[in-house]
Length: 130
Length: 294
Ligand code: HEM
Ligand code: SF4
Ligand code: FES
Image 1: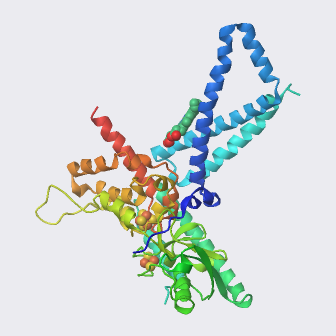
Image 2: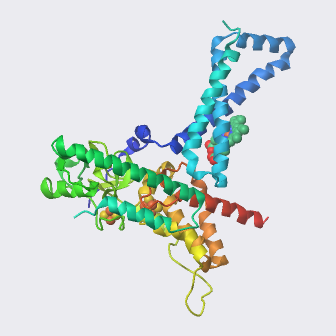
Image 3: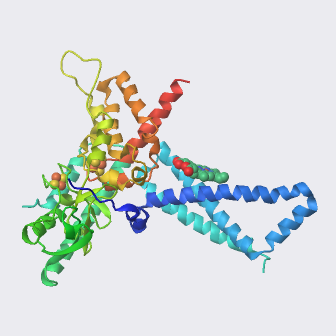
């Protein structure tokens, strides 16, 4: 008889404006989690320059830290890590069934707190690079 | 004609206050809902007063249209209808007016018109809602009415519910027990209160449609089916062995563990069932059960 019509991807990410707090929390949490995993590899790569000697390690670190991009990426890393930790604690509470009615507020609180911590950290991270 | 909605919301909230042993989260949620309803009522009165004098007294609907059987209508489009507004008019009332007065081919499901049958869950202004339980005056114009997302469209606003019903049936949504008592099988008041909210489901499919995970994983049982399972798992009259049997269904790969606590189902459920809370409780129950067998 009638064939049905599939509306495809437009139903999903095309509707991002209609996402609720919990959906954003989930997307950000997955994203930050995988960024952290990615960072872990670069972190190991940088640290392992120490295998070739103390001087090589010092030089690598000094070069990296003299670059503005690296400093900015560090601020980004902090943002990602802080959000992941705060929202991770929120998720643990949700798993325990604590404060379920405030789940959207606790997401906004995680965001706000992340923002505040990141802004406060900017002077430290960017000091001496200019 | 349509029910007087302001009265209806009052009745509903007074019925809710009767239950004493609701969880704190649920109470807080209901509290918030009542506040919002009161606020809406005020706003609605103000808006209606304004509307009477200004504008032309109509609401603009933008309705999704699609008909695979007619050559010119196979490409989905939006049709506009200007529907004359009357106090208390719901989205369903407006759709019925559009169908009766402007275009008799406009197709949608409805039956009870009082949030009982669950046939008219629609995607209205970006959110899953029951047409008959949604006041036009709560919505911004134009009112965009689409079929439920994540389900295939059969025609206009009618979606294929087969998959949803399959998921509901997969959890054995009926009372079953191995120890039949002599007489009546009585339930304690406390136990009744515990499952009360979960019994309210009207199989509308709004929750399933709102769930990102269910959209990506067709095998995921989904909030409504898990809530249905909760209703029987937590019913003490079924007995321990039946509870174990039900937990086995819940613990499957595409059962409770797929839930990522996005809360979208809880937010859209027209019967205010705390779906995420129920799913989380079943997850904890599953963990406790498995620890026992170590
Ligand atoms: C105090 C620190 C941390 C806390 C509290 C935390 C907490 C959590 C929680 C609760 C989840 C959600 C699991 C779920 O329900 O789906 C999660 C997911 C995840 N975390 Fe973390 N985490 C932390 C640190 C990290 C670090 C350092 C990494 C990277 C090396 C990481 C990578 C991930 C990833 C990739 C996911 C997503 C997994 C998935 O796809 O389901 N996390 N984290
Ligand atoms: S749980 Fe709520 S949203 Fe889901 S089918 Fe039942 S009544 Fe509809
Ligand atoms: S028509 Fe029955 S639920 Fe809306």
